[in-house]
Length: 171
Image (cartoon, rainbow, N blue to C red; front, side, top):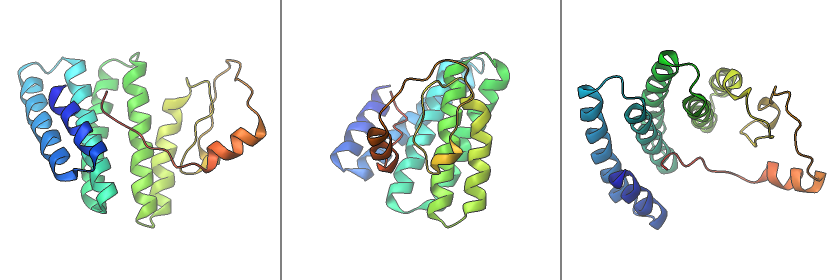
């Protein structure tokens, strides 16, 4: 977590190269740890978050193909973790966020069909979410929870839906 936290701080300070280097160190460390213990879910989850963070840096820097590659690595890891234990709501939530990030990159590339496909893959994963979530395509992010949703004023909802939001992937 230390490398990932250092990377996050560098990213917040605008030092993208230092952030990328620290995320790279975290990736190598988590990959080694995962090799020695393939069943460790938390290590796999952290490695996936590092790939998401690298994808986010690439997206911000305009390296969209690199962003897709990093996000796809994260998605593959997260899907493997969910297959191993489908009851892991946290990993399923991470996977939905990764699909959303992939959609954002495809949208930026002008590949709207691919963006919609990525969001469609995310939708089944967010069925447990009980509050509205702003998204790239606001109408595409619907919840199917039967839980009572909190009411918010329409003015707040309009303001929130227009605000860009960022998915931080490192805790």
